[in-house]
Image (cartoon, rainbow, N blue to C red; front, side, top):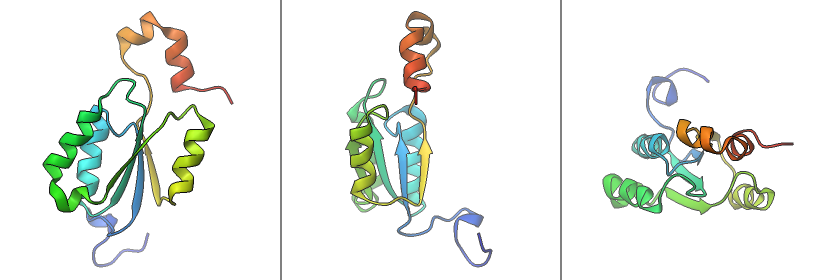
Length: 124
């Protein structure tokens, strides 16, 4: 990245740059999405709500307000589904992807290790 006035190097977002956030409705995802919107990015969230809820994105929109929320899109999808991912990448191009999707709760991984492993590390 070139240095100079403004830009991501000194903490400012690049207006109009598009970021895809997988698992963007989760705890870490929603905080990241809000910060990206505040920095001027256009954000697309893809989530299957396995361990999150749609209301989380509603809360992001409420906190961000109407102007920032206009730059937030949601595409329902599962990263394990080739069809879902083709739809996500056919919708637009992205300048960056931040990947938060995955199952990571200790209790769930102990109770259902096969499901957690398949979700977090899908087979090729």
